[in-house]
Image (cartoon, rainbow, N blue to C red; front, side, top):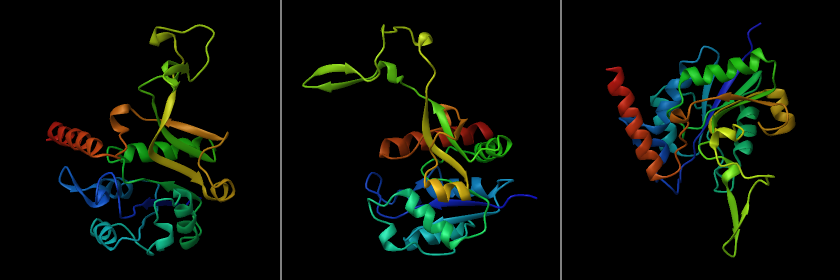
Length: 230
């Protein structure tokens, strides 16, 4: 029997880094539209919903075919509101789904192939949690903390490795796709634990928009992709 899968797109108003970020035009369409359209093309996802308190974001999401079954309460749209609280609220409103997919609108370079690849990996591995990651651009083995200008290695090593090829490959969360069994997510209240598996995405698709510079980089890459496709 095919599992029922719910995709949740959380998008509140009041962005500080990029004002009006979620509906700001990116390569010709609102930022949130890139995520909605990718999710709607999924072969696995049964329902794509928006969680937002903002009337403008809600209206734009509806224009692009996203389901908006509720308006998020204002108390769940504060600067200190956790994404997990938003997810738990959405699950309460939309019951009877076997799996939950979290798709943040700040990852516009993520494609339907990435979404379905992450879902498929979770199902094939019979895992409870799967999240998208990318190979870290900077190795933590070459990172330091500083105290009164004195440098201390973040990760202790018997001998400092000077060649990147000698370092272990490390991965970072890229924020693009999070998938979980609903029952496990309700219990753990996190996508990350010792049972989480990773779905690898390339760095060029792993931009998470937080600043105006991030926005400009994604705009350039999307425009370049469109030129290649035409």
